[in-house]
Image 1 (tube, rainbow, N blue to C red):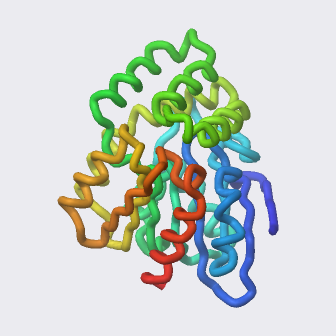
Image 2 (cartoon, rainbow, N blue to C red):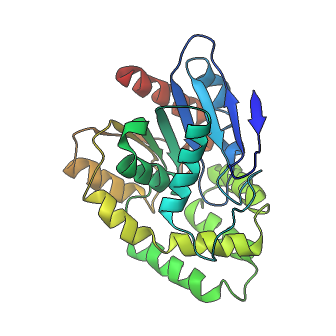
Length: 266
């Protein structure tokens, strides 16, 4: 393991494999950090070089100077800067939750850098319920402590008893965010529908696996609809007894489905 936190770069950790040049890059969601992949690292590193990245303001990554706003293009460029620094020409990408939007955007703007996509707990459309929740958050974020708001959303998205571990980990990692950073990322989340509309009309050509929890009531229906309409290059696996955060709720199934898919695309 080699962990780095360098000026002007996101904090990242690499796990090198002695016999391959292929990479897998893992991107967490808003409020999380690369620690959420702890059950995947050893498994993936048995086959690939592994790159973990903490998004700006998350985990060990400091906030990069910018305005109060943040765009998906800026977030994608942060990741590209790490790949360039490490001289990684291309990689498979695995994202969770908001991380799936980020890697989809990366695939749309830097297609040659992406070998394949695994979208876990994918977000490709916000339904009426989630849009109302976003509006509620926008209204209350300036006077409600952000951790109250984050806990509320965590329980809405991961409501069941068997989602407890996922909720606890994301709440714990979210405590590392500052109030200002939370608001900055929350504002980014309000751009999601505009970005997703563009991404849905321009589905990336590279192979894509969706790993969705059967109990992910907020996001699973839209992914089922998407894959039915656009089956070419898109594969969906619905994981039983599992909510939004598939890699934590069902890590063994997640790992097995992931490596089987990566083996099929090289």
